[in-house]
Image (cartoon, rainbow, N blue to C red; front, side, top):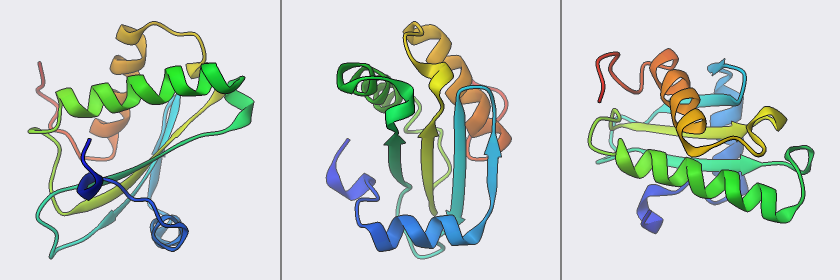
Length: 116
C-alpha cells in the first residue's frame, strides 16, 4: 500500500486509540476513527511480540496488507483504522487470516456485509 494509505506516526495511532471505538474477533482488534475530510481510508498495522518471532510477525503483517489491498475498493473511505493482530493469527493460512480480517472489518462497518 502507498504511504498515503498508512497511519505511521505515534500521535496518529494515539488519536485513533483515544476514540475508543473498537471491535474484535479471535485474531484481530480493530480501532476506528472517522475523518470526514479524508479522500480515502488510512490503516495502521500492529503485530506485537506475543504473536511470535520476527519472521512470524512479518508473515502476519504481509497477509493483512494483502487482504486490505484486495478489498481496497470496498472499504469505507473517510476512516482511519488500526488493525492489531492477536497471537491466534500466528501460523494461520492466508484464507483464514482473510476471513477473520473481513469479519472484523464488517463488525466495524468499514466493509459492507455482502462481499466477494
